[in-house]
Length: 554
Image 1 (cartoon, rainbow, N blue to C red):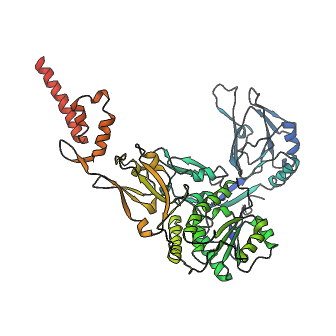
Image 2: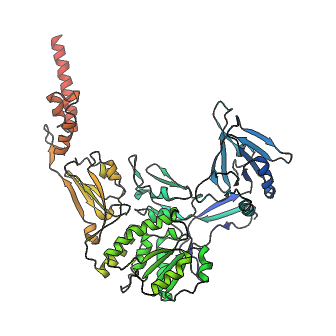
Image 3: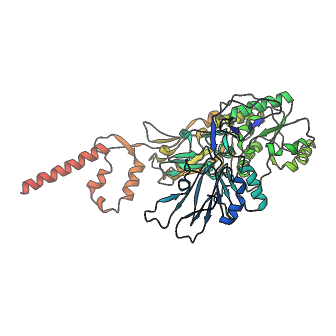
């Protein structure tokens, strides 16, 4: 494709129904520019032979020899650059791959850049064909333009795709990120790691007190948004509210009550099936991009059952992301009195049998409730609570609270009041304002509805007085109530009588410093009971007194 033509989109509309227009509002686009020059990694003779179909766009060869004493560059008779290097650091994406190596022969230790050494104007390679036995970019979902191929069949398939990757390409920016409510880190303490751990492209990394997402590496699997407890990471294309509203409309228009969520790759298999009239099939970019907020809102009306088609192995991170959400939704459904789980994961080849079992009256359907069409406003936690409020109103569970698994994003904290000194380290690290101070009085207050169970407060507590208790409280008014977890009478400065700490803090400090050589006299111990201003005054007065005595003795 020439540069004058329109960019090619890598992906289709990630959520569409037959005969309908693309979903929701447009998102910003990520654009790649590739001139087609390929870096071929492998033994030189084999790589030269394999790469001939790429000659029109140009290619460079690098062979890795751990015993190489230096970076060596040679040119073939046809002008192809062939590098021999002891190791290779490969990074980047389509149109911007960097290949660097530390040259053992360079005393300065400066990295040797193969792109610059090949006189590439951009300093980068556009594509990578990796013929190594072990992939240099081992992520489960490698960047666009990178192909790891070790068999003849895989190499032929890679070459077929590589020759097409020349020109301008674009894809949607799949995610939105709000660092203000991210629970990843505070005060150099690590909290929630779920998005980093689940990302199969390596696009998400720690950055300061939050995370950084490389939009060129992100391929829209959406598991990061599904697992995010606060809603800091959200799926941008489609937005959650767009996906929910589109599905609601489809169910109403088709008078169906069962949703089958699947990808385009599974469409052919579904077309060959005779599905019940009660089923609406919904093609999405990735099933893992739709989590508890989407499921629960649909179950609050008009859906009675959700079936998620997942053909990936159970060890696949995206599969595990879906299952982890189901694990904490399941006890909520049980507490509501729903027989069986109305959300299920099924392999494509098992769908027909699963639907037949449902038709025979099998468990796992949520029926006989009035649909609730509340607005979600793309707020994940609010959406989940609104959906559960609706289900609570309709089904009236007996329990006030429900115990949840340890990875659930709802719960309380337990505070050992005998150990807590009200130092407020937990309040300063809480990213969700679930923990509050007492303002004018020494107290620790808590709002359950805000708690993410991220564990930052537990890690920040110097007295190990905090533990997490995952649960869900049905009554939203009760969950939003400001609850006092610990409160003490303030301790007053023994000099100016200003309240500045608590008796527990004074007792703890006195106890811990009792054996310290600097606190073996009454003056030093008394200083612990002074506020900051009086402590400074006391020290200056003692110094001034010492100077006066010295002058008198002289």
